[in-house]
Length: 288
Image (cartoon, rainbow, N blue to C red; front, side):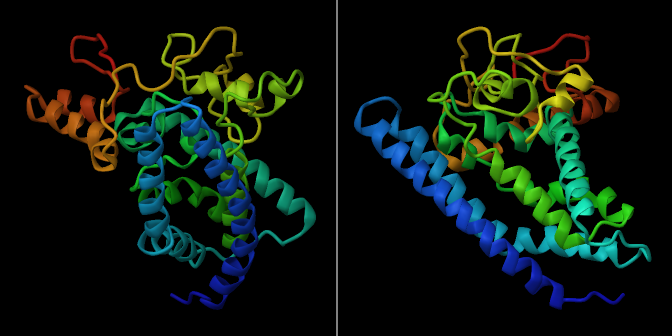
């Protein structure tokens, strides 16, 4: 195995530019949070929980999890001999493929309970604002890189793939807000605040809708699009009821563990782990 570690520097240098963009968003997040708390628009506990989760996540992503994510893709790349050249068209294609890969990853994180166990962290806040965008599970970095292995196997450069993914993720920061209304034709093509508010809703209309990262055309193509046409209630159908970052991060995993331990059949245990959230042996569902 021969991994070119000098390419880590190439990724880090480019990522520094993306982090400057993130810094602008962070300033906006802090300003919005301070104003909302000052005016009584939101609860302090949820906001502080979001910042606490984000801080720990940032430290993990920049150390252990980041190493696993990046190194994992470099290891996969080491086993293929073909490469897609770094050209303008390959960058466009990489961004499109990263976006559609994100769609399916995001969809499976809603439809497979073991994946939902960590993604539910992002959905667990009953409030919807810019700090919600940084409320991400601590274990995501250990898992999500696997979804992007197919891009590496196609021949895309690892650094190119990571940058494309970073663009998809950073784009979504601004859409976590109630301050921006509907945007007309943009709501039909892009993931916008209106479109994403539906995704975070708890009603039957909202659940399992609007998975797109940048483009919402994937939802239209695969039948998961829903326009915003009612007042949205945010969070989970069964709220966590805590602002403790540790409880928030491991609440659903603990619920899975309890369901598995009381399973009467092995097939039931598998259903609780790999079935849809809310799956029950009798064919019914429960709130999640």
